[in-house]
Amino acid sequence: MSIALKPSELALTPHPEPYCNDVIDLRELKQFIQSSIDLNKQPIIIFGANWCPDARLLEAILQLPSVRQFLDAKCNILNVDVRDYEINTELFKYFDPDIETGIPRVFILDINGKALNIHSNDKMRTARQQSPQEIFDYFQSFVTGN
Image (tube, rainbow, N blue to C red; front, side, top):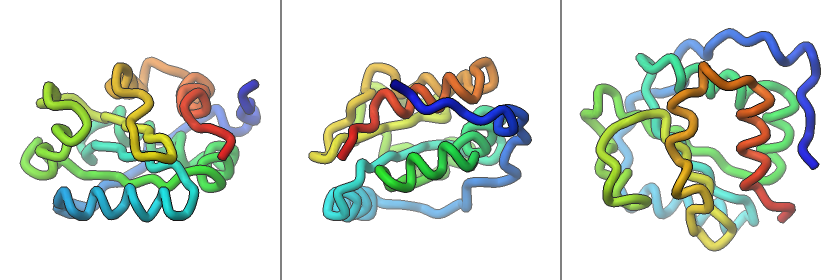
């Protein structure tokens, strides 16, 4: 059973700039994953960029109080900036060697570091065409009860 958003959480303004141009290497990515697991939290890695309206809208949904409360209790999230596909895109290959472009990409990992949503990691590329509840339900479907 999924948690429903409150009516006040259904009107959204895209997050102004959720990505901060940081270059992240594979070692740092693996360290984030391991530290999340050590805290008994599911790692979530989101690839995006500030120019992408779907990435900005997704971040706005993740900041809604109900969503934030749910995810903070069970997950650690790492936003990875790809700018104009100039940085951090090699990290796509860690999860799926066939990915070259397309954001936002969301990888929800289990407590053992395995990507649970490998076949739907591109679902948020159409975040603007989905309701906030649909997006929240997507995350809830992969986050376990830890």
